[in-house]
Amino acid sequence: VQLQASGGGLVQAGGSLSPSCAASGYTFADYAMGWFRRAPGKEREFVAAVSWRGGSKEYADSVKGRFTVSSDNAKNMVYLQINSLKPEDTAVYYCVAVWSTKWSRCTDLEVYDYWGQGTQVTVSS
Image 1 (cartoon, rainbow, N blue to C red):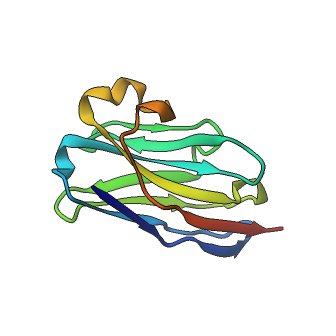
Image 2: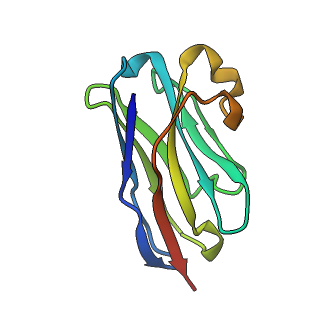
């Protein structure tokens, strides 16, 4: 199983980014996908997740209204549209995958089976 995240970068506060994640090596549609992030000096935290059919989505309170998670099962891709970026959004963003039966715990990093290598998002003030 491989998760390859890309699309991070350096932007000014208020800007937008669209990280994406390419998944391979498993049946994409059997898994829920999500994003975690680790800010400098902090623990990893949940950002967003989308269920295996895309019908359910969860967001951390800190990103609601600014972040949008989506998936494309035909392309084995998951996306994270980030708007109105803030300096506190600066972090390494990780793409994650978990078997769909664990959806009820999708905000818990311990349930995730697979992690990508991360993509850096840096927001300047």
